[in-house]
Image (cartoon, rainbow, N blue to C red):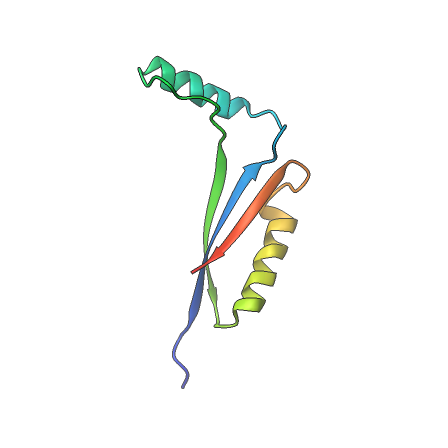
Length: 85
């Protein structure tokens, strides 16, 4: 029997350059109000940690890309990066 294998992935989703980020702007203002000086241009995003069964890294990457394109990222306004570990 083959041992159970998994591929771990981290997907980072961020807004594309030029897309307004009101949440990032609010965080930037809040950090300043809390006394953190010199903080500027805050952009917020999302991180997904996903575990996939199997050992085929090429298939995992293709599946993760499809997940991003179909659900995890709005590719009109967001970029995503996939890191397999």
